[in-house]
Length: 419
Image (cartoon, rainbow, N blue to C red):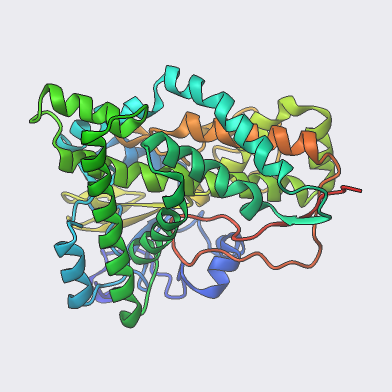
């Protein structure tokens, strides 16, 4: 789409590029420089999307799945080369690859069995394991004066948890994590044409691995989600096929840890950047759930999601055509002053922080929202208990993965205060 094809009357911000170095380093500085109160919906030529920033408008999009399709949620942001596209298709990576990019009735068909991963009983059973894992990871840091909290805690805790829940052998954890990074780069980044082939090959291998896992679990069941889903298949093969089970695993193996890694990292960063915040949490751990909700509002680990219109519609005063691609700027909705008073102030005691849209709404509301917050809470509790004098290492520059939809520091160096 060119600027000439933009909906009549829609503002255009030529300089807005969510993959520019400036945006990746600090999207909130970019946000502050934009007249969002005057242009709550605008067109961004750099990506060919309409950017939607107002809380009420994004909420409306999430609640109206008939008008706003999820089909583009995981579509590559950059155009794929024919070779990369052929590799993906040959590897079983279809244009509608998993739950988050499916509309009804296909979405419900996969979502219902996927909820087995997050039943109250399973979550309750996992809480002890999560805490034991967090303690083990922090104890492994020993008496180090400085540690990278992403490598030490924020990455391995949710990754090990969801991979174990699915039934992935521990020796394959690192390989799966690498594939998840490739998936983020291809679907939500802007890889160069010569990079796309390698990324596509890795994603095809990722798909193949999950199909093989389903085949193995078909013969050797265990106490894991894949085995649970195969029980549904055994009862009625048409109700849930083995290909659909692999598709569910493709969704959960990524979303089940990437978002929580970012949530843990973002929460720790925001607490530590003002040392008094961390000291308050150490003194009163009951503030931790509020700090997590406030981080989801103030600096969400999923700052953007996407939709596409199925018919002409009006949104934010703009008449959009059928097929208009929407960049739902969730991070901007959390800074909407009409919903959150003093939105630029980080306040773990904010009473209404949970009005954020970081987990979506409606039919596509994040299945693992409660589970992710549980992991983050346990991580923060154990971190505060073990390292009450934690401080950020001064002068570090935070790096972020170059994609539009998943954000958290790649490293987070801290001084532990250990003697």
